Structure formats: C-alpha cells, structure tokens
Image 1 (tube, rainbow, N blue to C red):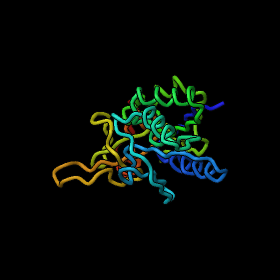
Image 2 (image 1 turned 135 degrees about the vertical axis):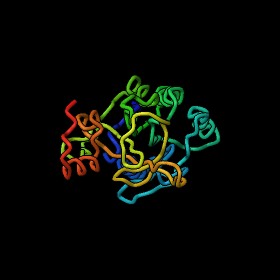
Image 3 (image 1 turned 135 degrees about the horizontal axis):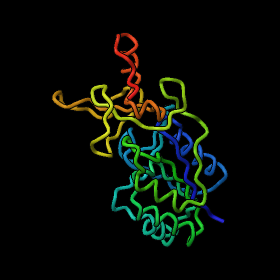
Image 4 (image 1 turned 120 degrees about the vertical axis):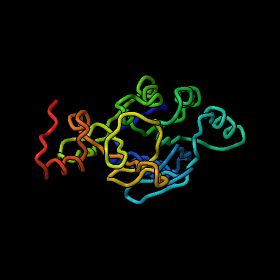
Length: 222
C-alpha cells in the first residue's frame, strides 16, 4: 500500500540530503519518480543539500496542482511510482490534500520533507496539514545543535545579528550566519540560526552569547 510520509527536523538536520538519498535509492531499484521543491536556498527548481549535493526539481508555486499534474502525466503514458516533495512546509494545505489524494486514489508513494515551525515558533500551514494527514511523521535522527551543545529545536531569524520574531514568514536563507538574501545597504542583513528552546526564548544567539561572555552584562534570566 502506498503511504504519505512526512520527515521533519530543524534547519541543518539533513532533510534535503535525505530527500536526495531517498530519490536515489528508489531510482536505483528501477522506480520512476518526480522531485519537487519550493523556495530552495539554491534557487528556483533546485533541491540542494548543505553537503553540496544538488538535483533539478519541479518548483511548487502556490497555484501548482499536484493532482492535475500527476493525472496528466499518467494519461499521457508517463510512469510515476513515487513523489519526493522537499521544502514541504511552503506548500499550501490544499496541495497537501492533493498529495494525500494521490496516495489514496493512485497508490503512488509520497515522501515529504520539511520544517515544522517558522522562526516565530508557529506551525507552517503546510506542515500542520501534513501532520494531520500523513500515514507516518518521522523526526530526523540527525540532530542539529544549538551553540550551547543542546539539541536545536527552533529556527531563529536574525537581522544584522539580532534575533527577530516578527516579519515575513518566507525569507529564504541558510544557517551559520550566511545571509539569507542579498540586501541593499540600507536594509538589514537577514540570516538564520538553529537554537534550543531555552535560548530561542531568551533571544540568545551564538553571537550574542559571545558578546555577553566578553562583557560584564549579566545573562538574561527574565
């Protein structure tokens, strides 16, 4: 029986690496699949891993219809045994419903990979719908680490090195201080960092922790 599987973790947990590996494993066994993504940091229609692996994919815009695409491909004589859906947190709930329908009605396996919550610690709508519908939801066993060494559970966004909790939900970027987007000189530099819950609550990023340790300022225990 086909399944809808959702594999999730924070940024830097290896989701895209696993998506590419899953695609490779199934293709190596003679199965035919399709690779999808949305807002990948490497650019449009690309699945990229921080290990340097990349693959061409189909870009999922908000108006993309998975059901129509799959039915059209099959009726034109194409073969589809599975779908790999990376950056699934950016999909709409309606698109997740379409993926579930593909599993149930067409018996095609769907493997989704994505982040559960945004930088505000709120569930992405696509991820929330996947949790509601998936046959299996798995947290990746490769643990991303906070600067303090504890398991990272939250994604933080920084602007000019200062953690923020408001702003546009979708701003594509990377971790470890790399800028999310090229910005004009009068706009803040946006980057991401993974933190444990404690330090996300305190807004204590690695850079701020270093600054605090070098000054007389007490740690924020409020």
